[in-house]
Length: 513
Ligand code: NDP
Image 1 (tube, helix red, strand yellow):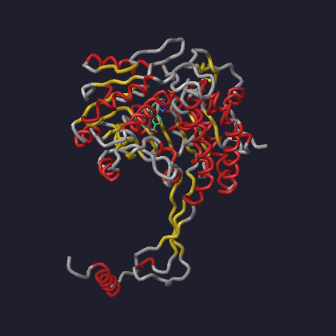
Image 2 (cartoon, rainbow, N blue to C red; image 1 turned 90 degrees about the horizontal axis):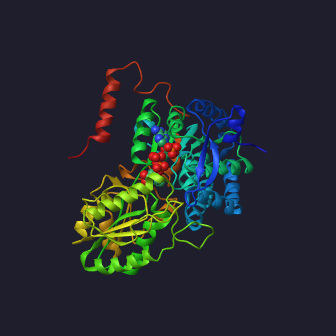
Image 3 (cartoon, protein in one colour; image 1 turned 180 degrees about the vertical axis):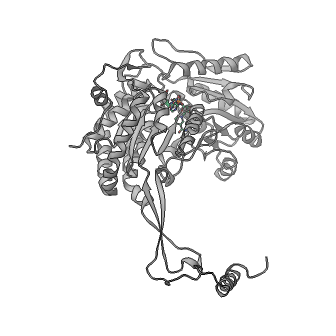
């Protein structure tokens, strides 16, 4: 059976006792596993192996690649308990968050890209309006780039780190994945899985290490798909500019949710509680700030406070027992704490929650803040935690202005019973996705693009561009019949210049403007 090189093999191959990274279980404070801390010196050889393996993988064709991806889809579902355990152990999220937003996503993505890669990447015949191309065949082809480097964050080790590898592989590339040093275990499990599913050796490799190996990888690969913070994303783009390597950047967000006075408040409050607290609020497309029209503000706050107050938090041990898990990394809990303190110092009220939970794991209580405004960090900077700041606004116009008062533009949502009006409001918000009576579920619509405007990113994942970005476009003109010498060729002559000039006027210069 075909093999995939794992990081452990690489470590053994080097024959040295190498430095290890201890992967912590954020919910218990225990150790979930250890992985080698690879060094930037090792990256070039890993990418070279990927480069050597890629032509064979491309040659397998769409059908051959789809077979491996469909086996992977089945594997992930057959082994869902193991995948879930691994994700929960390194992130501290609940089993339910791991099941819905990670395994559910991956299972659907394997099938989607297996099915749609030929549709999005098949040769396209093009008709040209140019008379010079009359009678010729024009073709647009998509060829894989070669080696795609994926750099991922810690919040969704399967969906965000590994998820971007799926279309890159479906397009015929080899992939080198650098997961976050905080959550590398799921990416390694996926290497084991792909090996079992028949992926040729070295087509998918994982580099475990710190940010320095991610930075080094940029110099060697043909495309960098980065998901993470805006600050690191800018560094990635700068580094990639040195080698003119294209990048896709999925960065931070500060998603606004707008509740209009005619909204179904019960529905909006359920959604606000879920989309702000799901995954402990550690989702780039979490609801991070809420604007409610004045006439319904108090009732909405009452409803959402009651719902958030009932959420169960603790150490995850099985599905269905808890609603909110742990905070995955230490610095993030500090950010959440400081945003809450800053808001309270500036006059906000904690309606529920507001402080850290009991250790040894890392917890922050699901929190609702009221009386907030844009002088507070909780309304302007990405919090990335289980907080929901709610601001009262005069009307929809004020809500739109405040929603757009942000460096970010990832997602937004508007809540109203009048969906036509909702659409009018939603389209005025500067964000890559702006929905009506929904938030986040667009991520499961793999047919539509997902990506950020402004400081939230560059390019999109999902939809046709979600796989075409992993290819080079090649145009081709195929001429079967033609003159021995075209009219415009040498030697230039007065009669031919006149003819071409007249022809251009006839085609493009007639009529009044
Ligand atoms: P970081 O930006 O800190 O890290 C992301 C990845 O980049 C990690 O693997 C990190 O490695 C690596 N890295 C660090 N420095 C460099 C460098 N100089 N060059 C190349 N790679 C480097 O983000 P987080 O992991 O903290 O993720 C959270 C952020 O991700 C949030 O801001 C969130 O909004 C955003 N995000 C965006 C999503 C989107 O789709 N738009 C989805 C999910 C998250 P290491 O961890 O080892 O340092």
